[in-house]
Image (cartoon, rainbow, N blue to C red):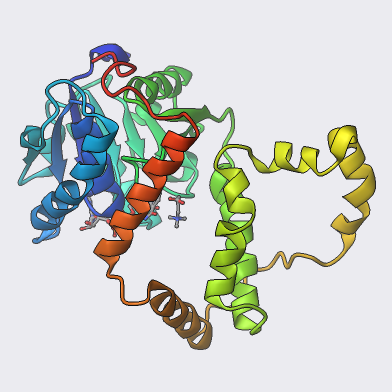
Length: 322
Ligand SMILES: NC(=O)C1=CN([C@@H]2O[C@H](COP(=O)(O)OP(=O)(O)OC[C@H]3O[C@@H](n4cnc5c(N)ncnc54)[C@H](O)[C@@H]3O)[C@@H](O)[C@H]2O)C=CC1
Ligand SMILES: C[N+](C)(C)CC(=O)CC(=O)[O-]
């Protein structure tokens, strides 16, 4: 690969500028990069600029990199213009395999040689998405968490045709850009965190479908319970403490047998109209009059408070080396 060193990247392209692409744009702008963005929707630029403006107060609170500005965003009329001069490309188009395949092949054709192209996919293995691209060696998954401008984690993994160099480059680049990276050495559908989230989500939907718990009870059970621990200690170490002085070994001896009890339903429930409507109505009730914009602002402040309380606020610009 002939790419720029991760530390020297200045120009990033974001293709697909919805919830996640827009979040990536906000993140890279706050880190001081020049960002080009392309999205085929007619109202994409308006939505994108609105998203960036809404994120900026949170990003300012975190500390912007030297020279960071929303003026460094250019929305282009074509995909080719967006990536033609890019030193890194983040794809965030809809989660449809045919769209990803086609788009990654187009991006590969239009992006300068050696430049790494990452997909935000939340579950497809890169092997399935890189089928139509000639330069498949530079295509990686860089799976973010919403909003990418506040949640540090990115899961990086290549496909069968991806070069190890591209995976290593992407991991280093994300670190330089202020992310917390898990680099996977093999493909697993849903990567690590989404497999865990999906298990929880599947159970939540079963409970709503069966009338066993309301949407609010499900949310409260996490925010008032395990969620408080998970912000700074994961499920493994947390459960090790359930074993007292005996740690995880005692925890397994004590609670291992209940793993065989039917606490979980491994099949997803049918997402029929009744379940769909219950979940949507339950969320509307839980929002209690707050708009999506209100909830986004509340979430952003909450994440910042948790990061601050757990000593994980990055010094803006310093770690980024920019
Ligand atoms: N929403 C979330 O919480 C997360 C989503 N992701 C992943 O990010 C990607 C994007 O998802 P969202 O931002 O949620 O979707 P979204 O629907 O908010 O945004 C998708 C954007 O892509 C644009 N688009 C449509 N066709 C396109 C094409 N051919 N080329 C480029 N752009 C195109 C749309 O106009 C839209 O603005 C998906 O792969 C998804 O799995 C990853 C992590 C979290
Ligand atoms: C809902 N989702 C599966 C697209 C979520 C993610 O992929 C990650 C996140 O933000 O939780």
